[in-house]
Amino acid sequence: MDSATARDQALDAAETLFYGRGIQSVGMDDIRGASGVSLKRLYQLFPAKEQLVEAYLERRDVRWRGELAAYVEREPDAERRILAVFDWLQEWFGEEGFRGCAWINSYGELGARSERVTGQVRAHKAAFREYLAGLVADAGLPDALTGQLYLLAEGAMVTAGITGDARAGAEAREAARSLLAAR
Amino acid sequence: MDSATARDQALDAAETLFYGRGIQSVGMDDIRGASGVSLKRLYQLFPAKEQLVEAYLERRDVRWRGELAAYVEREPDAERRILAVFDWLQEWFGEEGFRGCAWINSYGELGARSERVTGQVRAHKAAFREYLAGLVADAGLPDALTGQLYLLAEGAMVTAGITGDARAGAEAREAARSLLAAR
DNA sequence: ACGGTAGGAGAACGCTCGTTCTCGCGTCAA
DNA sequence: TTGACGCGAGAACGAGCGTTCTCCTACCGT
Image 1: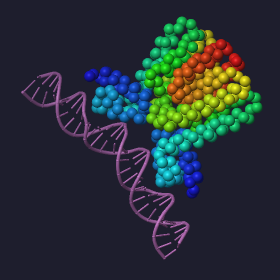
Image 2: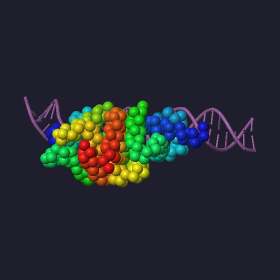
Image 3: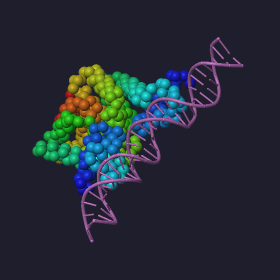
């Protein structure tokens, strides 16, 4: 097995386990068992657990935002694209194994202890907000809407995670529609 | 020192440390050091750490909702009371040592592992939502608004926690005002 | 005064887990 | 063929921590 595939398998296992059970309750040995990558190899690829955590969050960030953008781009109308964000969230909430936003959860778990994790969470959230800002600008809407839509999305993610109920997505979409209609 | 004050001091220390540094990174020994309550006494009062965590969340829940309600009640107008919720959130966000919502953070840290913590988080959020529902009903507004306002509040809490910026409170208040005006 | 009990300080125990080390095997170049 | 090397399996090490135990002191009723 070459380094690249070992890295991929390690990250696949890390993502499944960290997201599903939390970061602190997953040991490096669990990663080894789930990935088939030996401890020695794991520590060659990621000299410490924290770096595996960072790599997990980074790879997930790229994929998460990519999937969102791909979904939203299927909608041609600029204003409807904003609502498509909430449609996508709702679909995500309904997925098997959904356990809330990985970054919000990671922040709750490690934000007080790891600067690097906090940095990654902030970067991810800033990127998502920037993405929303772009959609708002493309629709010719005032930038003040961005923060409001962003808060709705965050509220929906955290609520869907805690209650396990995808209804939060629909409520957020409704609220977003009201805000768009009001301005 | 009698049992009641020992319990109070233990809970005071638990609240400061658990909220400020996360639950898992605070040991029972830290609680002892910060509270002055011996380990033996701690384990008499709370037979396991998880029960101290539960007691911490429960006491904080009562106080948090009490303070919110006391603040909101100072506003006589029913509709403005809803906005007062967001004013209160913003003041909270600006407080020294604010580190986000204790329940959201606890859920991120322990939600995947502790049924009881998950239960407490859900109960707290349900109670907050119910409180909002009461304000909405008192103002003669449609109940559909409740969920939307709730999501704004949750989004503001999680965002203020992650960014450390109280601006989220003002944005949420603005969004709430729009939603109230639209209906 | 004195035996008994509660409580404090902190050592001890056992487990988990991040990280490193050992050992043995297979591979490959010379 | 052989010796160096890479790698996997898993033991080992050391720290942290939840929980319990030991020992000693102080106070209580009689």
